[in-house]
Length: 400
Image (cartoon, rainbow, N blue to C red; front, side):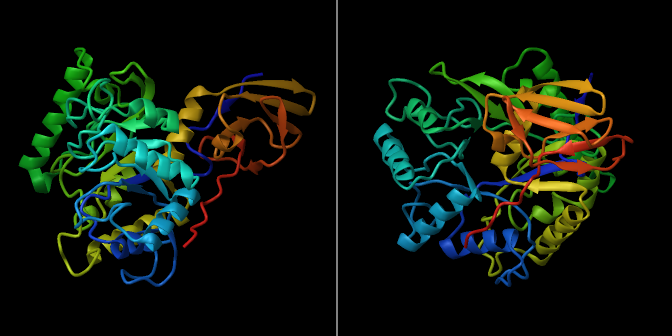
């Protein structure tokens, strides 16, 4: 018998990760207070916590005026390690501006391995020489023979997904490419300019440009080769602000990026989004977040509580989308019983959120790589009129 999978984990209609680069975060107090506000409901200096699930990035070698692994004290490093292990720090944001050699990369990876801290996502940073992209991000980290070559070490460490500078204005990926929502009447000239840029990117991608291929297809993920020949998975981020992909990408501009209109559009499109931002860029303001930004996170939490949008970390969203692309499954119907067999090369934890439409929810046996799964939930009819079963999606436990 034929079965199918639901695009987004039940009962949500869209999925988003706020992928914040830690550039210019001034100190560990700011870094960890942001994380506590976003991920708990504790009282913080920013305000009552939003209680979401939002990750962060980390790098190592930076100027002393910015928070980084080697710039903080032992307490700060222990906190970083705890958040990596809990999944709340989930991206390596290059090795930092001051990391220019293979030996520095080796030192940083040794530190991560020594503390059992494992990251699967690499995000290029500025124009750091350890970046992987040669066009947008000016990196040489994957060029054998250069002093900064490290991609063999980094990929062996366990990096699975890489971001090499691709940002789109399109609201929602893994959905048909649509420019709707970019243009704004109240900002007619700048939003028209942004729309035209996105239109040109799509045309260039369709004409064979590797730089804009992902834009033309509006895919979240694509297979790619680094310059040393290693195969990896590249992902694209999104900044849907009317001023362009580099506009309002800080803590004080966040409120004008993830608006209710953008969230509703994402839900309408049943799509995915990895949002590009820099929540630690406080512009030297006395407050970490503006009141408008605080309210925008509370608004996002309302959509999450209403089960309209699933908010998670970059790594978890990427693993879910990759799993959905790669799994195979069969179903055998015998009387009042259905046996569903799922095959996938990854870990069983990667199946979290997987939702399978079934004609009924009782009498189902679920198997993963021939091992029976008993921990799944029965779901009532959704907007399609179909019932389903799904692997639970537990929220990460915040450790600090």
